[in-house]
Image (cartoon, rainbow, N blue to C red; front, side, top):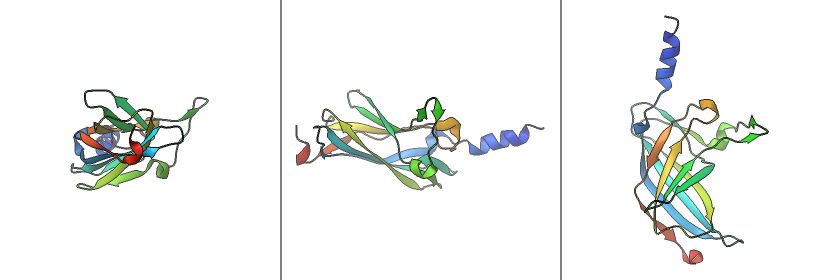
Length: 157
């Protein structure tokens, strides 16, 4: 019986990965920097389609690229450590947002690439339990549909 409160706490904060969905994505090239790298703005809008509130991180600090037939760009968060000491950011730096059912939020990141992106890419969002899960944020992976990359005249090779 002593374990019942702990069990209730764990089940109360658990959210299903299927409770979050991508509603829309966008990728646009903003131009080239002084080193000739292409600057892209990647964004997606996610929506809570579950019955409970979800906490998400809206300011990803990293991105990974998988070079499939349609390249996949995944926005996520990683931990920062200095001399093996975790550096804990304030919640405002992470853009922590609590989504009630049917609420949505925008997640975006600017990235620099040496080569232009493909004409179409998939933008994904990876929620991770960073810093031992202290923020209680949603954990999982959601992907948008392939989206056309918008290149303005400043981005032509």
